[in-house]
Length: 224
Ligand SMILES: Nc1ncnc2c1ncn2[C@@H]1O[C@H](COP(=O)(O)OP(=O)(O)OP(=O)(O)O)[C@@H](O)[C@H]1O
Ligand SMILES: [Mg+2]
Image 1 (tube, rainbow, N blue to C red):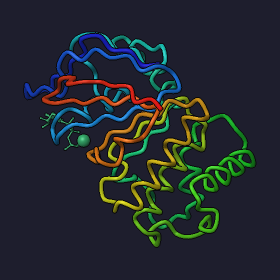
Image 2: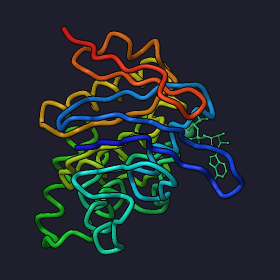
Image 3: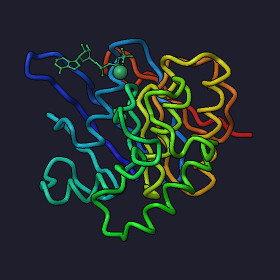
């Protein structure tokens, strides 16, 4: 699914986002990436999404070689990924449903099927009762769940969430982690970056990766 070898990202000003990281993430894995602020979590997410280009080493995402990926291939790759950003990137003034539909606009499917998929995704995140609400009237935790519904509606092979619980309290954070965990059962690979180490330490059947100063500090598989 994802494989890196001595992967580095050096930004234009010389700062390293990541330094010589070699890891392998199998298909269907649930992965938590932790590490202090500035350790390289978002840099890794950006490399996977092709938002930044690696400067050293190798990175393969869903069989695409990120060193030589073409613009056309990048569009295809991004269609297979459901990204969830900390600031949600939701459209104010539009309904919850519209915001989920936006995630499917480049897929080659008819509007009826799209609508069905949106409703299924909203049901999975427990927002069936908010389908027609305006997104700006939702609570913070509900907005995060809309962002998740948008990411999963297109049945991505990979869900990647950067700090999905950054501004949530403990109760809502657990709801989000449980949701993300449930997609593993559908054979979707799920990658989550988080500061909330205390909330993920007991989540079983997952791979925990810690980064520090752009380097891989340790990785550990937590089993039952
Ligand atoms: N566009 C950029 N140009 C230069 N340096 C950058 C850029 N983006 C990130 N960095 C630097 O790269 C390093 C890793 O940053 P990154 O955003 O990946 O950390 P992070 O682990 O996601 O931190 P946080 O937990 O605060 O979100 C930091 O030193 C940061 O200042
Ligand atoms: Mg970050």
